[in-house]
Image 1 (tube, rainbow, N blue to C red):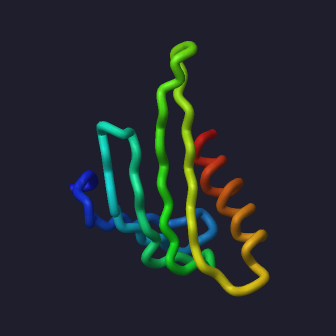
Image 2 (cartoon, rainbow, N blue to C red):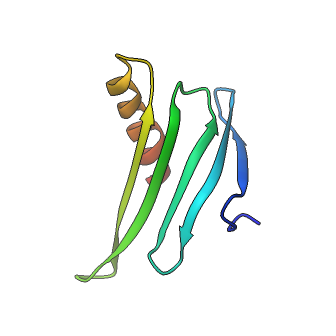
Length: 94
């Protein structure tokens, strides 16, 4: 099942390529999910990301925080951080 820790999901990218992710943690109580990327054309290793939602007490809103840590080839840190931040996180929020 998609909500069972350890499950694997696969999806194809528009540009081609496949991403395989593994669910590491899921909390309905804390509104957060943590996953790792097992396979990706992005050039990252040891990628672990967490998406956490926090209710905002002023109004009917939610604060979303999505973070990731990963290893990559030296010199590519900034490029990949910007690419993931804009192309993955921001694109998903929009």
